[in-house]
Image 1: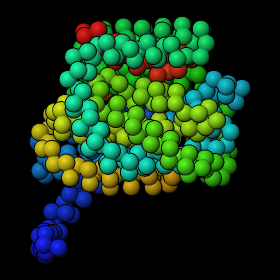
Image 2 (image 1 turned 180 degrees about the horizontal axis):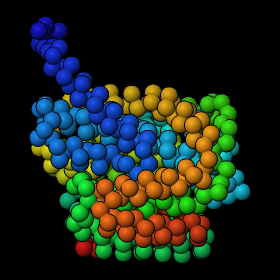
Image 3 (image 1 turned 60 degrees about the vertical axis):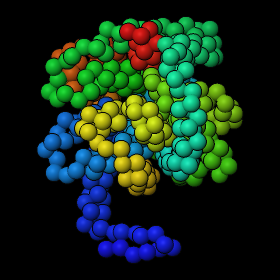
Length: 415
């Protein structure tokens, strides 16, 4: 059916719209699962979906919409297990992750809402900014691409030199080099996992970023009782931090090898110290979610996928139906915003009631299982080695983001 509005013919196909909504809702469900389960990334879910796309009864463009929805919801919900798991003993609060500092202070519910605001505003801001930023990047990208190893080497130097103390700089350098060596040795391997979806990335990231946090939290008190959810930052502060995260997310979307964590670290250098852990949560959440939109525009403009979700979409032969894909991202973002609050508060309460040491051990075993599923016995071995390497930065008081050397070093060396 259709009608004319101001001289423009508008067509409505209820059955097609319902089918598209069904696929997007399916993607939202997948992103919810991947976001709440430690060690299970939306990239892996997307690659699994890409591998079985021939068996999915629907057009590839709708499968692509489901993939983008899954990736978007994941960027909202992955903060929930990040806040609830790996919480150290209060005596270790000074060396904990910024989000854990808020949880230990009873402000976990506020942290969830700060993250939802950072991610939600990033979607609102990224769409209008994507066009001018894409035009700018398209003009300079050939130069960046020609000198990419030097650019990434500069990022590595920046990560190390911006640490606060000499000891932290040493730890950052050791962590970056060790993780980089691990990436050089393992990334090009072909593991025999139960499923072919993601290769060595699952055990590498589970070991480098998941296991160390859990190991350090063994014997800790877990999640204490949480206070009210009132957001302490002003609206202008949240808006400004979200904008900073959004613009930084463009760097992730267009430059290979630069992760959300790396871009977030760079953005935080510009964040006034008074915003503390709250500023960290808003900014990094904005970076993480904005990356989804900017990477989509990068694929459209440059023909090069920048995220695992888009790699999977390209492998599945998904057409670049930009309006449909952006609509699926917007819908998924709205749902993700609500789910962070609804599910996040419950997640914190449930985790707070269980034996925290037993929970940490169980999650460590879950990560080992995920590593086996995606990379077989070799994945278990890599998970163990990566777990040891992942302990290095914290021992020196350095940022964990230096472990992104696992991608930065191989790309910067051109190997």
